[in-house]
Structures are given as C-alpha cells and as structure tokens.
Image (cartoon, rainbow, N blue to C red; front, side):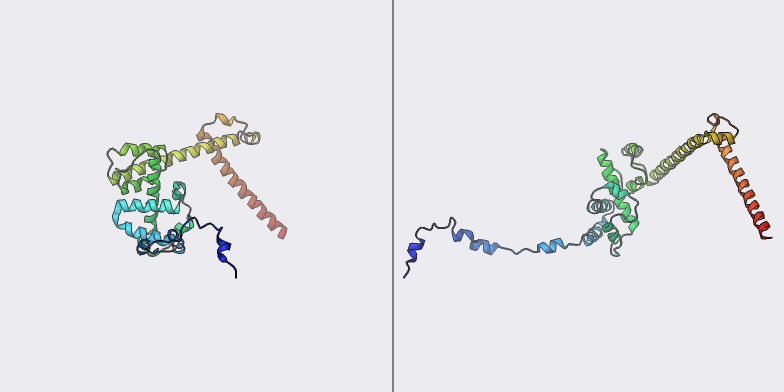
Length: 252
C-alpha cells in the first residue's frame, strides 16, 4: 500500500488561506445583486433617452430650452458648432431620427432653434463673452446674425443693458439688411471688374471701336453691355428669319 504522506511531505502549503479567498458571512449578508447587466447598458437607445430628457426639461422655459439645446449639441453633434449651424437637411442621421419621433413634445423648428442657441452660447463663451444676462428670446434673435466680429461687438454693446425683444429684432434686421446690401455691392464690383477685363480683350475692343475700356465709368460699361444684348437679340432674330426663309425656299 502506498504511503501518501511520503508523496506530499515536501509540498508547500498555499500562500493564502481558503478562508481569505472567500467572502465572510458579513460580506455575503451585505451583498446586493447588480440592477442591470452590461448588455442592458449597451442596449440603451440614445434616441429614447433624448426624448425623455426633452420631455422632462421642456416645461422649464429659458433654462430648459438651453439645457435641451446643449444636450443635443453634446450628444448628437459632438459639441461641434459648425455641424450644429449647418443647413444640410440631412444633418446627423441620429438627429434626423430624433426629429421623426412623434412623442417628442415640441415641433422641429423649436428643437432646431434650441440647438442653434446652444451652439451660439458655446461660440460666445469661447470668445470670452458671458451671455447669461440675455434671455432665451434674445439669444434666439441673435442666432439670425452670422458668427463674426460684428456680432461679437454687438453682443458686447447690448449686454450691460439688454434692449426689449422688439428693439433687438429691429436691430438684428437692420444689421442683416446692411450686410446684404454690402454683399450685393461687393458682388456688383466684382462683376464690373470682370467685365472690364473682358472688354479690354483686343477682339472685343475692336468690335466696340477700339476704345480704351479701362477709362470708361461703371455706368458706361453697363450701357455697353445693354447695347450688346440688344444687338445680340436683333442678330438672333435676323438669323431666325434667314433660316426660316431658307427652309421655305428649299421646300418649294
């Protein structure tokens, strides 16, 4: 018969005890099972979470509106104000799916305004401006202005004593009208400059009587273009009459 004591007499005991490896009775009594699994956490629907967040905050007017916009900016647009201000109708697919939810509680235009105000809030704060003194209505009106130095200067101007919502709307409209007028004038100047270069070409100058087009005023250039259009129309009409007469002659 084999003496097992001889086989194991040189074996070292384990470095830790069995008792130390297991939880004691106190730990077992206080143990609480996890309320959710890893799979459940991974399967949380971000769209449903967003809907619930929006419905909870929507009653809190100014503060709730900004919180909703900030939530959208951070969770759907990666805190990127360029993406948030984009007018691309597709935008982010997840945001589009959120907008399609019938139980959202607000219309899409309102949701979009909240998002743009939150993006504007980030833009202003990044530029060192704290717009806390302005109401959400004021901020929604300012969204209509481009994010540029003119807007920053205007916000700094009104912050100490914010105007009424109606007064602000009028100022914003005036600024936008002025910007559009300046843009139109700039476009007209570029076109006139391009026309001068075209009229300065030898073949065009010869057609117009070899005048130095660079010496002509803007009004004179516009008159020349108008005259060319009229002559071109007459030439096209003459060509049409010629081809019509030719076709009739060949048919006889």
